[in-house]
Amino acid sequence: MKRLHNLFFLLILSGILALLASGQPSAAAYVDSSRLLPDQAQKIRAHIESTLKTWEVPGAAVGIVKDGRTVFLEGFGERDLEKGLPVTPQTRFILGSTTKAFTALSVGLLVADEKLEWDKSVSDYIPEFRLMDEYASLHATPRDLASHRSGLPRHDFVWINSSQDLPGLVRSLRFLEPSRELRAAFQYNNLMYVTLGYLVGRVSGMPWDDFVRQRIFRPLGMTASGCTIPEYVAAAEYAVSYKKEKEGFTARPFPRPEEKLMYGARASGSINTTAADMVKWVAEHLAPYKADAKTVFPAEILREMHTPQIPVPQPQRAKDVILSPAYGLGWMTDIYRKEWRVQHGGSTLGFNSFVAFFPQAGVGLVVLINADSPAINILANGVADLALGLEPIDWSQRFEKMLKARGAAETEESPVEGTKPAHRLEDYAAEYIHPAYGKLKVEIEDGRLMAETHGFSSPLEHWHYETFRVAERELRGEKLTFRTDERGRVVAVEAKLEPAVKEIIFERVSPPEKR
Image (cartoon, rainbow, N blue to C red; front, side, top):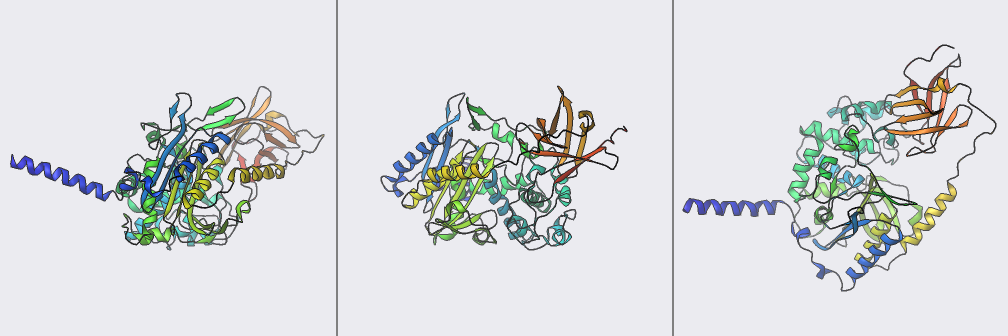
């Protein structure tokens, strides 16, 4: 009997120790609304509800941390319109690029383990890592990749819906044209964060997603978080993302298994989680700036992540309230209305997220929505204003003006009239390939050309001469120009998939027939 009693005591003790090891469970387990002024919570709710209605967003989850405590944690609207299911603090959303801070911390933890260094060449850890610029190949460091100063522009279509595996993607980087020299400028690049995830796997001996689960989620007690689509749809509560169309909301499909980088773990943006878990993450990043607070992770790593590494161009839409923008390691930093802010937004698969904290004020927030909408910034800025006790700004009005101005500026150049293709449609039909961007297939269907790449399929309409325009879906408006050899045979097709560099050229796989 005494042995059973001792065993029971040990089980209770181990449970308490596990709870303590999870970081700061009080930051999410208990909502201490007393730390908000009496009307603050009411104003925050009103702002969220009116923004969702004005911008037609189905649902949102919002959490606010103040002085190490969760002071606001609520769901709004619906996570599933068809089933009429509400959003709660336990509803999962997909983060998108706010994942990057988790990846940067993963690298930081390996630095603390003395398994790698921020300022040692990536090629020392991944010998097959190569960029088109030879100097960058030999000298680019994890710090360069994490702060978006590799010299590469986005080249996003390389990975979107790609069937390529992670090692293949890293090997294909050498075929991508840079637009700047190494460390010359900030150029946001998801591919570099995918590469950092590969680096974490190579150095730690476990895949990036397993590392995040074991070294970040588990210590923080983020028990409702994952890194893949299968984990997401297996959750008890998950949000469906929606696209607003004339006839109403349309649910967006989730990626398929063959779309490996979108379906599986992606260190640039695949983490899925809840507002209840994310307030623990926010509280951890605020802790190094609170005199008596303890951190789960080394405070010096967290502070280094928040330290500016390279300047970011000033956003014109908010130049009166945002100063000195820069990028740290997985976080953006700026001065927002005279307050130092560390923040990051995310967008993927029709979901948007925004995470921000103000170290000197001891305030942080997370906003998650199931729509791809400017409302994410309106919600986040408005919540920050109210949580900080600042005079509110009409962010909806600002973004409406910005979108109108952007729409007026986006004018498409007209085609040259009176031209026609130089070849029969059959001469264009073939498979074309680029070593990084993958395969582009052109076929004839119902008497017109169809283009298919990365799972996107659309008719092509003749624009002028040898140029055709993508008529539908995600690449709508993209121009494809067919190239010929000295015999006049179609041998390649080029597209402006990355505006910062020359056209991307897809070479014909099978030789053109002799005519």
